[in-house]
Image (cartoon, rainbow, N blue to C red; front, side, top):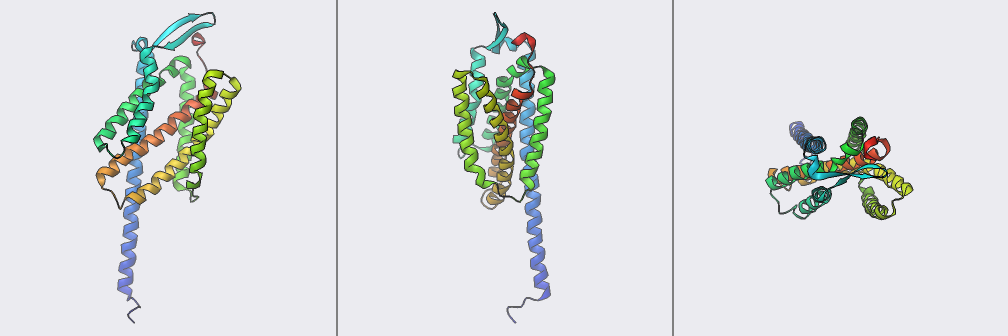
Length: 260
């Protein structure tokens, strides 16, 4: 009889378990909302800075127009070149300092990174028409939302794709660097196509990873660490969105006639 729980104790255990699940689900929803809020705020800041650089007098600090036989070309100044490579430096600092940075420091670096990324991407608003940039952005947003939702809700384990996606990223970087010297239209097309597919899948993969790691770290870290992790998770999704957008722009973007 000692092994037969009475009905009251059984109900209490069931209620406790249900309450625990409800608490975790509510915490996960709040955490995911925080991640998406950070990502969205970062995109807004990036867009604002990109527009400010491209459409105001700040443009002369980052770009110069050069008259060539083929037309007017817009080329980056020294400061413009610096902004092109600066985002990579920010990512490296945040990656290597993940265990050393405070929550406030991580947040500050995130804002700085998004602002510098906006300056880096401002040439998009110079090279392409605003209409094509806007339409590409909305297609990117719809694709991102659909894949992130699928990654969050699917019961399929996507973790097995991690190695494949990592190798794909390395291959994409190498191919992009090689094509900087070859200037091959065919290779540029393939790089853009692979980039679209890769970052579309990465969106679902990272969303599921964020959900899984939240449930794992919930029992081991405090609110301060979880707050910092939300910034890093937002950075992952932010980078997926930006890369997906830039690769889609290679197909959907319409160039301004006065920029070659």
